[in-house]
Image (cartoon, rainbow, N blue to C red; front, top):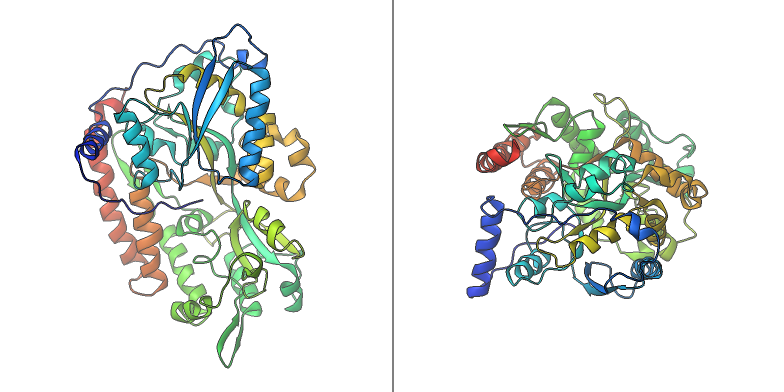
Amino acid sequence: MNQPQGTPEHSGDRAMTRRRLAGRLAAGALALPPVAAACGAGQDAAAPNVDAKPVELETWHTHTVPSVSFDGFQAVLDDYKKLKPNTTFKLSFIAGSSASMAGGYNDKITSAIAAGTPPDVLHMNRPPEFGEAGLLTELGQYIKKDKTFNSGDFFEGPWARCTFFDRVWGIPVICDDRAIWINKAAYVEAGLDPAKPPKTWSEMEQASQRLTKTGPGGLERVGFLPVDIGNADLYSWIYANGGDIVTVTPDKADIGFNKPAAIEAAQWLVTLFDRVGGYDNWAAFKKNFQGQAQDPFFTKQVTMKRDGSFFLSTLRQYSPQTEYVLAPEPYGPSGKGPATLVGGYNWSISRGAKNAESGWSFLSWFSQKDPATKYAAPQGVMPGRKSAASTDYVAKNPDIKFFFEALKYAKPFPTAPWTQFMWDNVNVEAQNAIIRRQKTPKVALDDAAQKVQVEIDKWLRENKDRNKK
């Protein structure tokens, strides 16, 4: 899951137009255009319609070209063109991620809308950020009229990442979640049984202590650290300890990331770093790490790490000989069982798209279990639909089945207009201050909560009437 970069500076009249547009849309000053009727949108995707007018769907994606993920995407598009011979795709690769309202991806979207030339369909990592700023078409009216589209078939976590106050801004075609990856050889060398991975934080501390090695030059092997390696963040451990991040209604926001369960989770991060001699000791050790075939997990410099299902493709490409065990993330003393964070590759329709109805017809078909499974397979991730459990890809692939089953207890990180602001304040600024012992967990999270509360309250005030409709 790519994290967004900083916002570049812009200049000139066109840039000013984009800034004004984004600002007015974010404040709700411009209404979204009416959604075109979508009767039968999913139905007519099931068979060729030679009488349909030729349509070229302007499609923006973030798959590196060439890559196995792009090849898988192209294969699915080819399947759709066989069903809809008069539909073609004009593909544009957009570097980076749509994860934030900042950076190159956002600049391209806002400038395309300002110029009246938006893409029809496009990849969206966090649709509500863009949708609530007026950059996307709300899909609810399409869904209501499409009898073939069953939103209840999506897992709760992936679907929640695409919606805000019941407004649907994207479709979770494929998704991913996380697990504890255990290097089997290193685990056995330490006298531990890989068939009995740690289930609780206490058990993880004990296993990590046995696996960690130090020598004359410092750390030689680290058993486990909850963040700063792999794909891990404080949000996840708050969920694993039974806590929450934030609960928002049209009237108010109740922040949970500075409540007792969250503070306890943050303190656990400190405890694990203390077990390896503190953050500075870890940072010095980390300087020796290399990537690809020399990833520290492959070389046994790190025995266990939390990473996503997408790490499967990395392992298969660079170190297929590495034996590993997958386990649910351990839960804390205030937790009742495992929890995992869900991400994914969502798709949306731009605001003002010229071929919105045809775009919906494609997305409705694309998100069905078979096309979505074909798209997911080369990337080592999962279709977002529960019904995909019956596909061979899930049922006959133990690793994918593990991650697919984990979607039942997956939690979405909050997706909203302030998503990036909150992420940066909690999972970057506060988290770094905590593991470096620059602030206590309570002080760091209280400081973050104060800033985030102001940001959310401001947005709720400005959009009060709209949110209560």
